[in-house]
Length: 201
Image (cartoon, rainbow, N blue to C red):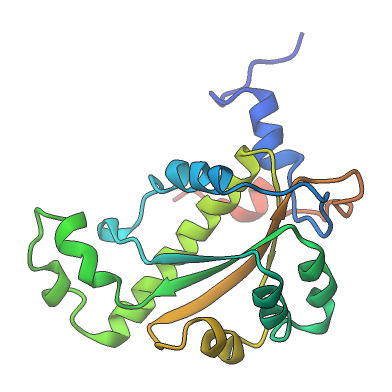
C-alpha cells in the first residue's frame, strides 16, 4: 500500500503542474485560443504579491509581423523555437504600477505616494513582484494543459524599445506557449534535494 501523501493536491495534479511538466521547446500546431489565456490569467491573478501590487503586463504575440519583430531581438538559440510556437507571451514589469494602488489597496490610501514615491524603489518592487506573477503564470499555463517555454535569451534593450517604447515597462521573460507534442520536452535535469536547500533554526 502506498503511504499517504501530506499534500492535499492529488498525484495527477501534482504531475500536471510540477513533476511531469517542464520547459518545452516545441509545440503542436494547435492554436491557443484567447479564452484559454483569459482563463489562465483569471486563475493566477490571485497569487500573492507585496501590497497587492499588480505590476505584471503581458503582450501576446500572434501576428506574423509581431513575431518577426520579436524574433529579431531573440538570441540565435531561441529564434527557431519562437518562430515555431503557436503563441508567445512577453511578460514585463510595469514600473508605474503604483498608479493602480488606490483601487487595489483602498485601506492604504497613501501607499502610492508614501511607499512607492521613489522611482528606484518602484522599479525594484515591480520587477520582484512581476517575477512572482510570472511564476504563477507558468503554473497556470500548465494547469490549462499547455506547455510553457520561458526564455531570457534576448536583447532586453532592443525588445523593450520595440514593444514598450514608453520606457515604463521592463521585459522579464518571453514565454512560448502551446499544446505539447511527444518530443516537446528534453529529459529533466537534476534538482537539489531538500537537505541541500532547507535548514531549521
